[in-house]
Every structure is written in structure tokens, then in C-alpha cells.
Image 1: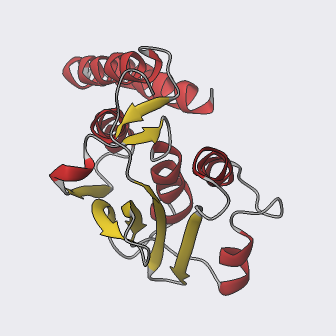
Image 2: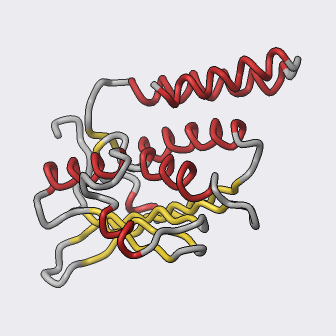
Image 3: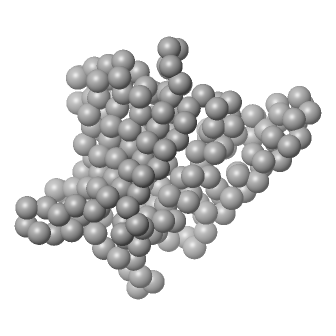
Length: 198
């Protein structure tokens, strides 16, 4: 709800400032984001669908933050048909914006999403996804508590819990962060092609 309120508030101010083209573009992206978010009602989507929804979200945020950060995507094509729980990536990017990029004062923010195939020690294929930013970073204690109840937010913790529930306890988020340099969150999970029977 806070995301929706913030976007609608931004659009309202654009309309009041008579920025009709910008407000129309944001309304279009909001409509697209909502259609992608709520479509089909399933909790599992393809990586391609998850990225399409994420891209709509990021465009909204870039407008809201007046281009304060750039967004890079580097995704291997063979990851795109694999299934992933819906809303896995958006909370991680939202966290990067709110707690990393938004606090920067000395440089423009950069958020990068990467996805590639890997093979574990048993020969099982994995999808490896990273969300990284060049934001303010976290100290060691904050990073260690990032996915626990001691943290102030629940978005990343919720993603971590859903990954563990869906794929098993051995799969979870990994957090690496350096103060004043940025944060990288990594998710690895079994590669499983999406089909309508999943």
C-alpha cells in the first residue's frame, strides 16, 4: 500500500505542475505494473515474467526519484523459462532504492540485476540471481541481522522465507555489504522449467 500511495502522490504532483506527458507515462507504467502483478493469480511465474514486472516497477521508481539511479539487467537467456515465486525480485530492488540509493549524497545510484545458470557440487543446475547496488551499504552486524526479526524491514525477510518454503531449507538469500560501497543479495535455487501444470 505505501508503494501505491507514493506513486499516486507523485502522479498527483506532476498533474498539478502540468507535467501531463510525465504523469500519463507514470499512469501507463502503474497500469502495466498492476496488470503484471495481479494477472493469472498464480504464485509462480517464469523468470521472464518476473523481470517484466520488475522493469515496470523500476521505471516508476526512476520517474519518482527523478532519474537518481540507473538500472542494469544482465540475464542469461537460459534462465528466462525457469520458475520463480512471484515478487521475489521487486522487494529486493525496493530495499536497494529505499535503504541504499536514496541515502546517497556523493554519487548517482546504480542497481544491477543479474541472473545466470550454475551447477552445484552434485551436478544439479541452479539459477543464481544477484541484486546489487552502490548505495550506502551496511555494517557487519546490520548485514548479519538483515534477514532476521531484528531488522526493521520485512520485504527481504519475506522473500527469504518464501524461497526456503518453496525450494527447501538449504536455499536462502545471502547478503554481502560494505559500508559506503553497496550491497549485493544473492539467491540460488534449483532450475525448474515453468509449465502450466506446476
